[in-house]
Image 1 (cartoon, rainbow, N blue to C red):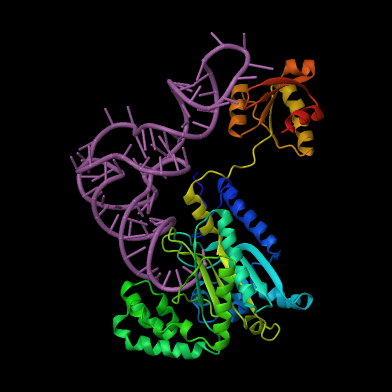
Image 2: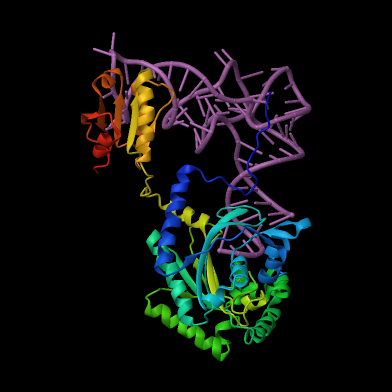
Length: 420
RNA sequence: GUGAAUGUAGCUCAGCUGGUUAGAGCAUCUGGUUGUGACCCAGAAGGUCGGGAGUUCAAAUCUCCUCAUUCACCCCA
């Protein structure tokens, strides 16, 4: 009888043990960097009220319109991003009262029902970093510089692009100006851009078609139409980056897919990931906190990094610097007695923080030596009838090939094995 | 939602214009005289050629349908 094979869902992937070492490397490095910048980790639920995302991300965005995993009958949704949940928790627990400026990060899976492709899955993972409660441009700079530092420490080379989106004071008039420009060139633009000119004119700036880009090259730049406050803020951000020695380039075409962004926006981009260029993207979202029921005018800034994309970039480099934690000892018990004695010994040593393995399939000595070698064991202990008789086992150093007799007790073995 | 490409062993792939029991490398397992890994050698195991119809004396190979995967568009981390 053939049993129907059950496969993982489209866009959902298993991360196999070999790859997990890479993921852990990224996560551990990130946690270390974040801690140095005095960020605290927060863990959030994956399921939230649908309303939360509708209000924060925006009803008219693609994400909310057609990409969310929603349990319609229960009015709950699997989070498509983390910022909304994080702010919800910040408000719900009054974190802004305990400490006016909160620095938080979270790591975990997000869900969007999109067509999968390179660097894009339906369940994907992000690290989300936010500073809530400060509108000081130094905070923007510090956050961006931290991102840059993380990439440097991971050995991933990316470019930083920077822009400002203005605020509710200056954006509307810029938007009108841009719209007028687009309408004057409408005939030269692609179908998508014609549609975008109605739904979201800023997106036209982002089009990848070369003939659209040519047209857009002459479009008015938001950077030249910022209100005085935004203008000053943005210059401070740039000065800060220069002071900290963070290289960046201005990209006046950079826009955001989520409604809540304003002022500073940035992306760390790469050309090594096919169509997916953004490895990390974020920006300021003053006003979002208030919109979700938090303190009036509560400012915030944050960014999200795509873990899959970072792992992909790391794999591209192919330097096998990520060795897994090897075994310290592999115990080979020969014969019934040998196996029995080994079994207890192994357990005892594990209790003493020793990484030990043994085979339970009764295989030949040679076969077990092979196993030990493959597992990367530093030492192998052989326990057969002769050894039990004498009370000492043969301990072999797999690297030097030297063998010595060691008393068959946990403490005697630990003394040699843990010497390194 | 749209378009294109690809589905042969656990993995990476051969298999030309249809023709006997479908191959290789890696990985796995067992051996290569007493109880010793990596290298080497020998052998074993592993596949309803994604699935279903059709054409044919004959289909992994040709046609159609279907499913899946991948890449790209859209959008985004």
